[in-house]
Image 1 (tube, each protein chain N blue to C red):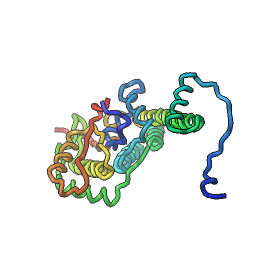
Image 2 (image 1 turned 45 degrees about the horizontal axis):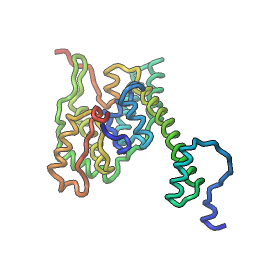
Image 3 (image 1 turned 90 degrees about the vertical axis):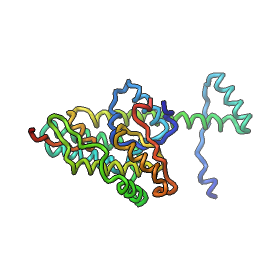
Length: 91
Length: 179
C-alpha cells in the first residue's frame, strides 16, 4: 500500500435531510470550486465540528478560570497576581 | 473593540485575572469568541507567579481553606492553554529590557494594612520585563491590565530599536479596550 493510499480517510455513505437553501449554496460552491458535493459538505461539517468543540472547550476554560480566582480576599488575590504583601508596620 | 479572531494574544498575569468575570459579562462573551479561534497564551513566568501564590496561600492555611486553595490551583492548571517558555531568545530580550529599565516605574504596592517590600517590587518588575520579552519574541500583542509598568517598557523599546533587531514594537492592548 502506497503512502497516499494509507493516508486516505475512511468514508461512509449516509442519507441526510438538509435545508434546501443550504444544499443549493453547497452545490453552487461545488460547481465554482470544481469539487463534488460530498467534498464541500464534508469540509463544512468538519469546520462546524471544530467550532463546536472549540466552543465547548472555551466554556470549560472560562469556568475553570472562574473557579481558580473565586473565594479569595483582596490580599489573597494580590498574592495570586504575583503581588506579595506583608503586614504594614504601624506608623 | 478588538476582533477576537485577530489573535492570538499573550495574556499578562494581570490580564489573566480578568478571566474571572461573570459568564454574562461582555468580556466573557469576547473571551468565548476568542477561545473558539485561539488558546490563551501566557508566559511561563505568569504560571510561576500564580503557582507561587497558590502555594504560599496553601502553606499559610488549614482545613477547608487548604482544600479551596488546592482546588483553585488545579482549576487554574487545567485551564492553561499555550505556555511560552523562558528560552534563550526571551532571556536575551528580557536582559536588554532590564538593563534599560533597572528600576520599577512605580513604588511598591501599599494599603492601610499591607505593604509590598522593595525587594518583592523589584522581582515583580523583572518578571514584567520577562513577560514583555516573551510577547516580543512570540510576536504577539500583550493583553494587560498594568499600563503603569508596561508603557515604560514599550517606550524604551521604541527609543532603542537597535537593541531589539528584527523585533518590536511591543504592541500593548488593555483588557478594557478588548470589548
